[in-house]
Image 1 (cartoon, one colour):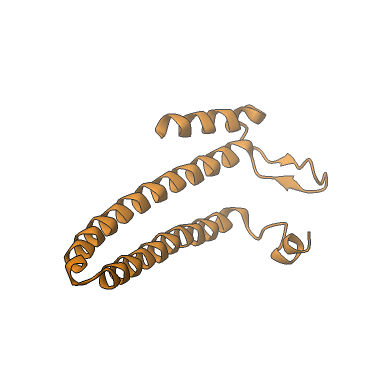
Image 2 (cartoon, helix red, strand yellow):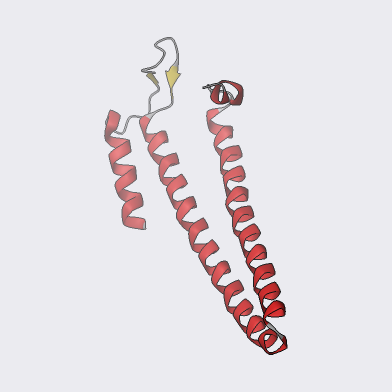
Length: 130
């Protein structure tokens, strides 16, 4: 994980020679883009956030699945229906937890990056009208 993060930082940072100066944007010459070193740093942070979120989600998912299997085993002698309901409810809990975990990290990352980058050039309205 760390090796890939270092590679991402090195490859993206070397685009402008690890420049810390703003460069004219390729899509609009009258605007200046953030430095290549900042883009490399934030891309590396995003990668590490994603891998950490995946790691935490996997850990929480395995904890829930382990407890669910034990509960389902205890419910099975009472009937297939009760065991199915137990497994189904626990699966729903796990699904919502993992989705909420990913969305929470994404929301936090977007708001933290917005502090540096400001408002995005492309708004949601323009993005959805493709």
